[in-house]
Length: 176
Image 1 (cartoon, helix red, strand yellow):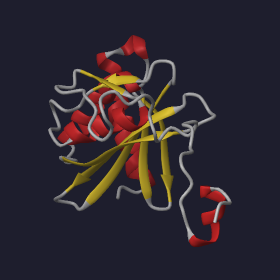
Image 2 (tube, helix red, strand yellow):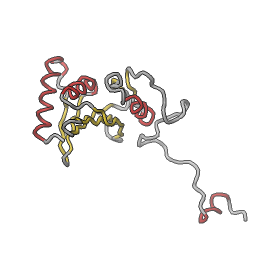
Image 3 (tube, one colour):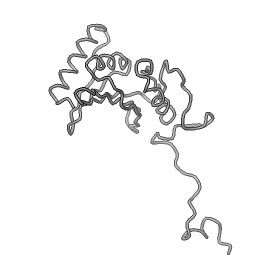
């Protein structure tokens, strides 16, 4: 893992490279977090593709995972987390972005990282984040006609009670 100093240098490099390319829109790196030996970059959602390409050029060539998170009740509520590995230095860096629940949409990284295909579909299915430019944006885990996103924290939890011997009379009625 990059240490805290190296993480700041990576962030500074990304700010310089992306900032000069798009000076009017500000920095692509919003924050750096080094906690318990783990290096994390929090980035602007509009710049995720460019940031990941720059990190790939630095040696982080393997997208190990891409997953969603729900920060309910805080806004921006939804997040996408990318875990990148440098296989030569045995190094890992995490890239996070946050999205408002009203418009949870971010560019797909599947064209640059083919391993993101099913992972983006899973985040879409479970959290409702749309990935612009994804080649096959249909549901992967739930039926196509399923309404809602089951891993959101405000998703209603319920259903039929599980039948055990101790509650058999309660769930089926009190008839012998």
